[in-house]
Length: 245
Image 1 (spheres, rainbow, N blue to C red):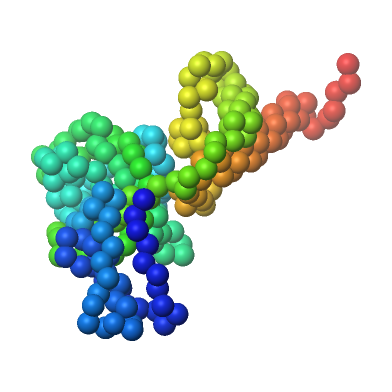
Image 2: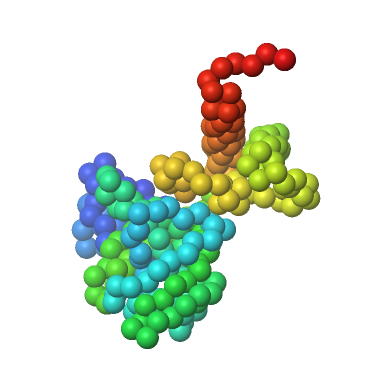
């Protein structure tokens, strides 16, 4: 766990010190900056891809790359085998918590440099600082971790049970019990087409228990929508009349 610096009531300015350390200036000792080093969790010059979507860890995301700056970004990610980050460009602005992704496969590469990629979400991150010196959007990011807590086995079991019901209703397939038991909240949510606000809410949570609680509500809401669709289809087939017997 990184060390935390006690900040005085009068907020001190922050920046980035040497080696990527987070720099906080103590207002009582203006000549002696305090450095908080978290080298394992900070990444500099991290490629950032603002999009109108939210990616989750484990989710497969197909991308069509056509802008020059993003062609350059993806070429570098392929050459250096590094991740890039997807951030949701919402109506309220660019979100600061996103999902790192890795390129699984180049599906197609055209003569003009455009490409179709299959990518997969890996881990959540938070933008610490935007950087503008590269040919594409980038920043200093912190890979965020969950807080320490005891897993709620009953909560997880309920979430997986409701998810299993949703899979059966939506696909007519029976989920494998052993595979189901291993699924995290992210892994389950990555297979369901939720709204973007709900997916961003999952990314923002730093607790697996909280994510299990949220996906349970989302899965139950999806089941209710399926019930409504089924009733609407049945009503349409009966010309709006309720049939008895």
